Image 1 (cartoon, each protein chain N blue to C red):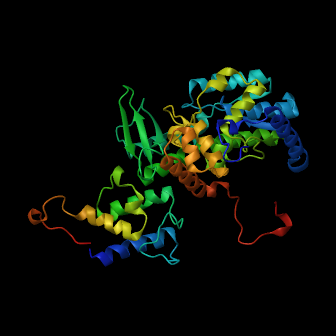
Image 2 (cartoon, rainbow over the protein chains, first blue to last red; image 1 turned 90 degrees about the vertical axis):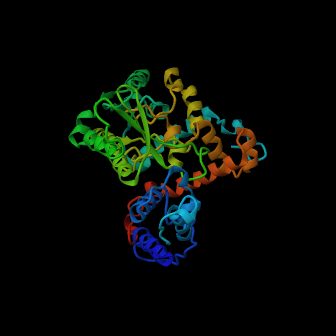
Image 3 (spheres, rainbow over the protein chains, first blue to last red; image 1 turned 60 degrees about the vertical axis):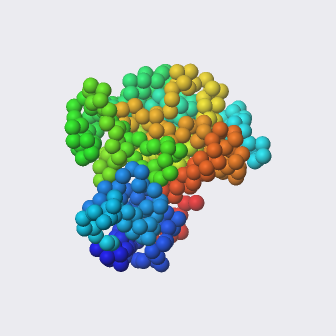
Length: 97
Length: 332
């Protein structure tokens, strides 16, 4: 999945699920918490979405605003989840997102 | 109440005699002028809040105008029944004991709850107990999300983070308890032409620690303005039995024993009271940190958490919302 596609997938989910289809000036760096777009149950919804859509497992330590509070943050976080954990030269294929 | 600069644990001290008289006068006025009801129905759990509320109602109206309800169920702690009976006997009020296990079975609560738990812990079965917990506000730098703790009959304990669906299913099922109790309270209120008293203290009311149309439903909430520490002060003044005053605050909602600070407030009530009063009084985090032996970041995080909870639980406080006001029947 390309970077643009990943961000669009996240944006589409946020707009449809939390904003009833009205974008209301949502930018890639908009803080979802500060703008009160999501609350604690919203975090659980976001985690369920990310795990389902991108086939990842969000660990307890990763449940921080730096990973989940904006489209940009989620995209950066997903990059780390898809990156090979060690030496890139010896790693198999990995998907740029 | 203190002004900042002189903030201390003493800031929560209240003039109990004056406060009790003020609440009792207001109770009578509200019943007479607003509610037009002849007495108070109250569910008693053997906890400090319902005991103090019942004692205030007796003081304001006389014991014959207060009707107390004990409504335990299968998962209630043993001491719940002991202490709720104790406060009823102590106050000498008319009462009814109604075990709600049968009603909960009829609506499918126990099956729905166990099914939801098994989404996370498949081996959960007969003899197991469980509860929801959240981490302490200081334990991590992230979100305080719920976990499920389950204990097998042999004492083996499992803790797992709760994903969205089982979390919502567990909460939805558990809310049956508070809503069924409220339904019974209103049956008796209608039968007696009484009003129903809710029993939240200020921490619970402010931070939304109640079930909408469950324990959050009431005609009057006499101690919603009092910090928990102040409720204990009133309890002593009103002569609430010591066993009740010594009982640690508990939700008494889940089959595994659950104290309030591991589920909702993340801090013991004395610290939460001071943090809430400190925030309400604009006490600088540095000053509160020194008083509580916290670091400044911890107080700042608690202040933020208070705001988060206010925002998250605003929905619970809202009445049914209209697209357009109907001025002829608006109530301000």
